[in-house]
Image 1 (cartoon, rainbow, N blue to C red):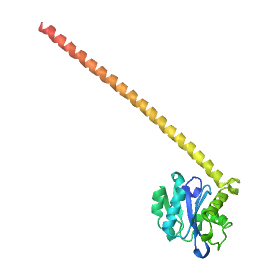
Image 2 (tube, one colour; image 1 turned 45 degrees about the horizontal axis):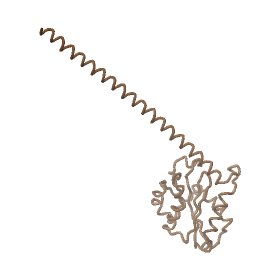
Image 3 (cartoon, rainbow, N blue to C red; image 1 turned 45 degrees about the vertical axis):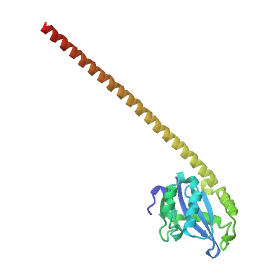
Length: 220
């Protein structure tokens, strides 16, 4: 388990689990991507589990929320062999589940269980239209969840996004205030140094004039 400890807390946005739900006779597949904190799920229909198809599907579906993605946890499958390219594209760290440790991706497996209500085992996914997959995605993301006090994944995701934006704005404001204070202090320091240099220069000029005057009096 090399994932950051915060991933296990299921509190922050952007820690996704990824798995494949295979169709009848392993023909066709459904790429399932689930956020651990909110259960927000993205689905993408594949004609097969080729790693290039999987990579392109992941990047396409998660690109719109790329800025909030932190980690991606994949099943141990050759279909996810392009994980480094995916991680680079989405600016996320990638991990694989430990062998025979289903809890590492229990969230996405739970969602697959829900999806199976719409696409039971032995469903020929090659005959399922992309529009139907979009309908199912919409339904499961708007389905109340007991552990969220019957809020939907979409609602929980929206609330966390709102909080994230609020915290980001607060942080940016704090940084701007610090920069403003630093600038003010810098200007004040420059003024103090300038006045100090002026006084030194003025004092030096007065001493020089006094020395010249004294010299002239002696000469006379």
